[in-house]
Length: 399
Image (cartoon, rainbow, N blue to C red; front, side, top):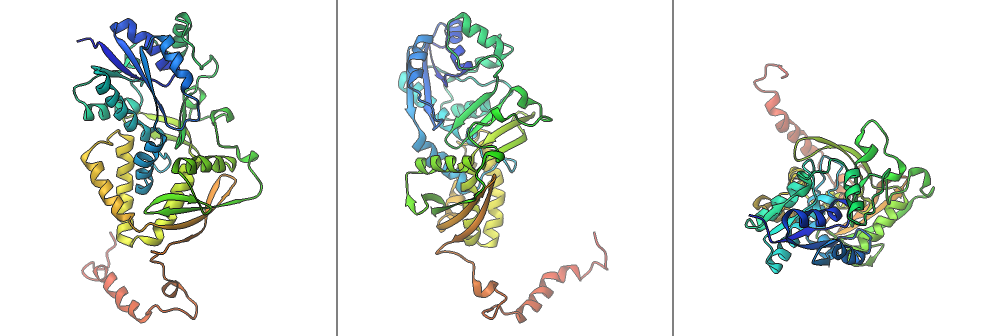
């Protein structure tokens, strides 16, 4: 059954700009656009006129930066969620929030379908559709880019020109770029060849090492219950804090990532990422947490962090397992309060100090100087018991 009203996740980029006109032609339906301000650093108001001129009957433009940070970024930070050791999940974290807002607008407008601009090879189709179908299984989901007639971005640009649709992408500059407050993802073009170094113009906000200051810069981050609340002793709104760290880290070349990753659908993809603030905050959080959590909790949390990152990457945000992990993570973060000092220099982030009122670190137990309070005589019995299974019954065998 053809939908009569469709809510489209609209970025104003090439795909979704073309998609408004294409959906109208295919379904003869009313198209309502939705654009999210996730801190991509662009004025979205021009999208209002553009969407209407392209054929949308209405557009919602919502500032979601605060919600994005508090409800999506910070939970991932507290969980230490990093996909395949490098990707700090900027794009992936934004997708469940967009999916939730699409459902809310569809309910508000009594729409019977939602649409997105994801291709059949990407991760975002999974993230959007699993999220939407979990929250509103009755909604029809349309994914034009999976089956429409365009075989290349050049063909889309020709269609846009034919229908007088303004687009920002030009021939010869075919990167696909997704930006938000937490980071930038870049793909397509020459980046698709993993044997070639990413060109300088593929990076948007992080300076090349050759253009970074020759003097290190120090920054202090204060955390409360696992969440950053202050920078250099100044308490600030979390959105402002992340923006300042993006500028600071970008200036020092911090946060560039070039990786080949395993996509949800099974193919490998070469991606370029920039996430200065995310990189700094993850390093700081990890350092502070190491002072506070006991060994078994710390080690088990690494297992949870790995799975938590996979759930985000796989589009499984609105799931019982993710909720259960949140309960565990929030418990571990109860006492992750303190300050971390970091040194930024030539693309690196080094820990220059950390302190917490809940630190389990004891100088008297750790030191080798005259203040040493550790009972060395107790170690002999411990070592014997610890190694007992390997002295008994093996007959000297090593497996």
